[in-house]
Image 1: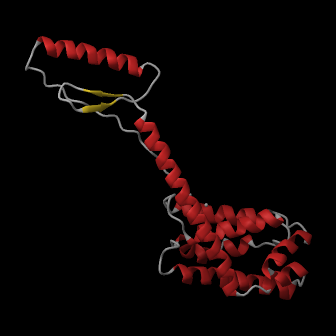
Image 2: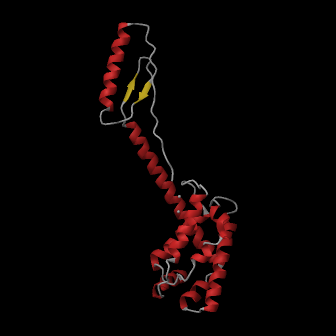
Image 3: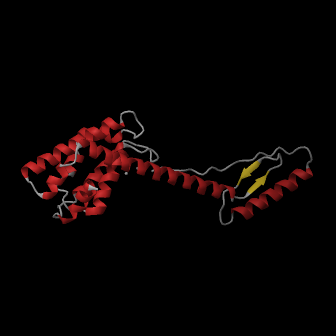
Length: 217
């Protein structure tokens, strides 16, 4: 509860110029994107983005100082890329948390505003706990989204027109404005042709596959 009150207390601080929290989020998301992290994989970087986004939701850019300078450090890149289910995830969280704690300790020493003092009062362990909690929430949310998308894909395919060729093999017909009608016409013509030459038919079905794309915090 004390941690929550400190976060909410940021709303009483001055607005920091340059949107430092937004820039930190954009940087981390860029690292994940540029390193081709699969969209269905949750990383420590995703957890950090989720935790920063929560603070941003509560306080905007108030009391942020230039915190993006901390999160944009090249030294944090490998930590961001660590999957949250990796045995090294806790170590990655601790490394990021220690760097952020050092950043706020320096701010509290050189510019002891209430916001900086509150930020510096968070321990590394508290920061890790905060990050991991939002990482788990982020992972569960993605899993639920994947499940929903799979259900939608199944529903689309189960409602698609399906026809049998002369060998009793199914051939998926991609839905289109005129596709079902023309496909039925071709099938009727093909059936007539094979019936006139009994025993000579050797039709072979062909399937159309939908191509799926994946996008990543």
